[in-house]
Length: 106
Image 1 (spheres, rainbow, N blue to C red):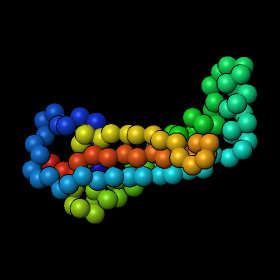
Image 2 (image 1 turned 90 degrees about the horizontal axis):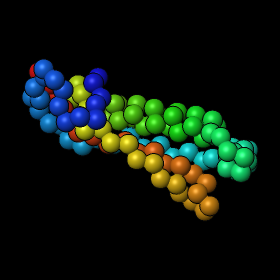
Image 3 (image 1 turned 180 degrees about the horizontal axis):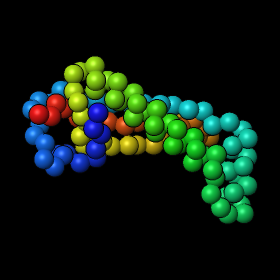
């Protein structure tokens, strides 16, 4: 399945629009990652723990989006958008949402 942030794919024609599809993942961030991120905030540097969590969550959300698009009979998703939000008290959870339009290309 083709997934793209653009609204078209060069050399391909959209035959049918199947609808908007979403993939959502909410993950809790544990106290060890929070502590290490706090240390990084003070001394500088990147937080690999958060980066890894975000990357894995984004991939899981995209996989969910693919499953939903496939269930609609599409062979591609165009206009992919990725959003991140913090949830819960003190931002203890991260929500990753991906959305796009499921289409069928000729």
